[in-house]
Length: 70
Image (cartoon, rainbow, N blue to C red; front, top):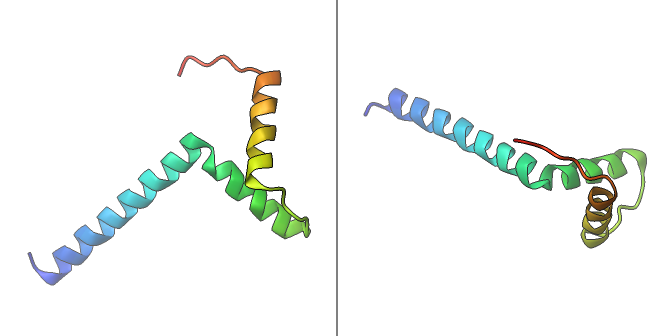
């Protein structure tokens, strides 16, 4: 494989892995934690602990169940 092809393959693989990483973070809810931390930083708020954040998310999901087919 020539240098240009190897670089193109590596670049495509990197993009694909970043896409998979993004998808998994969205699927698992990890992205919501990142969004929350970003929001706190932008507004100068002290963030709650990760445990408290997840507890509140779970409580909210219990109070407002959403039925999804997919």
